[in-house]
Image (cartoon, rainbow, N blue to C red; front, side, top):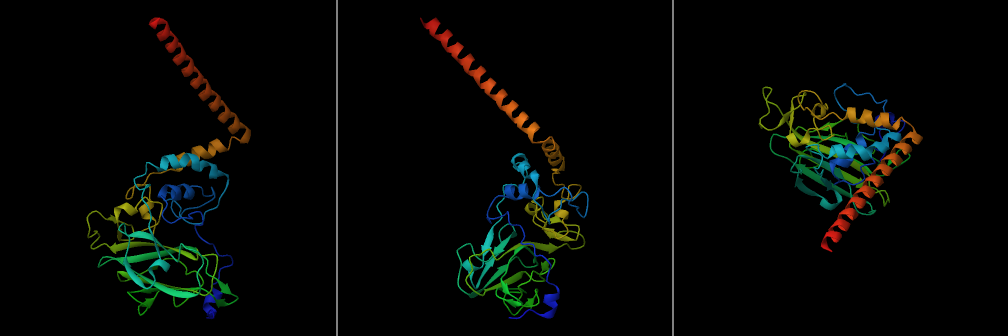
Length: 309
């Protein structure tokens, strides 16, 4: 299959593979959140009260994850597992969206496979719609010819409206939304390849508010008038589409970890020698406390033995 001229013109200069550090699908959001807080200090968010969620760079602040994870554990959604549905394991099948109405879609968790085509259809409650974004996209191509292709349809089968404009091997820009409560993802692997992590597709289910109100009382209303499950806010994923579910002010009222991040950054700025000195000092203090406890215990034992005699 040849790439169209328009597709070729939209080919980015350097493709970003996506969130590679999230190497396992069903890992707790604690790990995900810790990585996302390791962004470059030069990142600029679209709003000062919203946490950035794309374009991360890895720098020395990675050391801070050891301290940040402890704080993440207390987040109300930190222990929630994000489920992954594999197209290969559900080839040409229809399944319901995850109970939390949010998850990931991938090709396969197994080893390389031969050339084949599989479709997966996800369904949600009537009146719901899907929002999908790629967090990883690494489809193979040979020159201007697609080796692997993906197509996303708005509907229960491939007869629905293609949201990608056909079979593509270039990452679609922006989010993909459906008008129905079903979405069908068709993936064609053109040849056997050791890189089975072809793509990672994040999805969330939403409903539109009616007269400014969510039809389900417990749902969270986004700034863009979408309604999502309350468990999907403050989970370090943009489930609304405008990131309002991650806002730290009124509305989502998510915990702001920026102060903790600044404290850790200031600590790291002391320099390697100072950090080593502090760590050694703390270790010496701990050892002294342990020795003191042991001495006290020994003295108590001796007094007890003397009294027994």
